[in-house]
Length: 128
Image 1: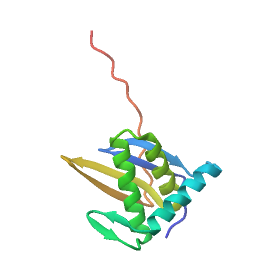
Image 2 (image 1 turned 90 degrees about the vertical axis):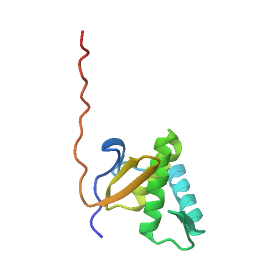
Image 3 (image 1 turned 180 degrees about the horizontal axis):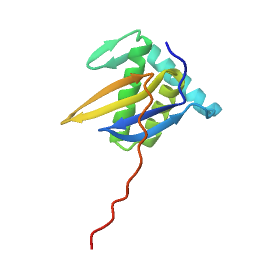
C-alpha cells in the first residue's frame, strides 16, 4: 500500500460532502468509538446482501463507506462523522469515496492514492 495522504474527501453525485484531515488528532473518545466499530465488524458484516464472517480490510472499508454515504443521505451527522473518521484513520491510503445515486441504488467507489480535485463553492447572483 502507499503512503498516508493528507485528507480523505467524500463525494456524493460529484459534490464534496465531508473531508477528514489526517493531520488532526482524534480524541480519546473518538479512538474508543473506532475501536468499538472494529470489534463489531470482527463479528461479521453484511455487504451487498452477503454475510461476511471474517471481513478483510477492503471489505471493511467498503462496508464503512456505504454506511457513511447512507448516513449522509439520512442526514445522520454523528454516524457520518464516525464512519468518515474510521475510514480516514484505518485506511491511510484512501483519498476519496465517490458515491453516486442511481434511482433507489447507491454506488460507492473507493479511490486510493488519487488526490481529490479542489472544489470551490460558487454563489450565483440572483436575477432582478
